[in-house]
Image 1 (tube, rainbow, N blue to C red):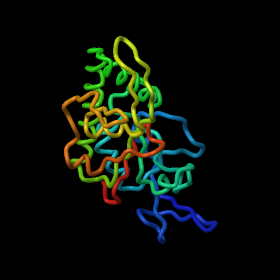
Image 2 (cartoon, one colour; image 1 turned 45 degrees about the vertical axis):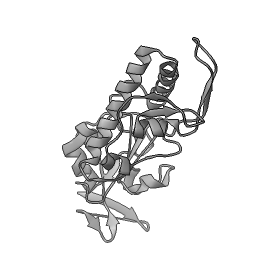
Image 3 (cartoon, rainbow, N blue to C red; image 1 turned 90 degrees about the vertical axis):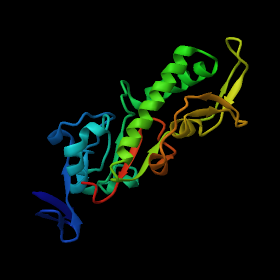
Image 4 (tube, rainbow, N blue to C red; image 1 turned 90 degrees about the horizontal axis):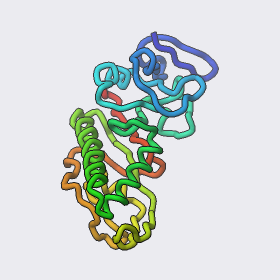
Length: 222
């Protein structure tokens, strides 16, 4: 049974009821792993199509944060009112997304300075994100995947390596193309792997997404 509210009244039924779209709560019924801070009234409400997709494909995502508030209640970011937008941590993340980003930044800096362990860490981490995004793209259920941009970062000389500066946007380029460039466009690091064309069409670096991936689902995702 679905329930939708509007205009001071509540109606119940299946699917779309009198022009109002019913939402399902997902996390507890489906046993989904969560990340982030919970919003009052729940922040995991989804349209039926996304609920159905999660029922069969929860192994395709990492720890989930927001979808939508109950009956599309505004959670403070307008895109999450439709019950079709899902925020999640990065693939194979072991820490909150904000920490994952800082670790990636530090590993990138160390890798550019020649540390082989950091080169391996960046290569493995970014390859994992690319593979996960490609797997989602192959399902043809998404309209967009938003991810990190990466803030500008000046790095002083260290370990015999000269100073360099990462431009705003470095993380988006790394996620999509597998390279790190400085502010002059010079390639500082190349993991020799980029997203395939299908994933690249869906992926966009977006402000406010340095700490998570945002999946926008089509209405017939299920």
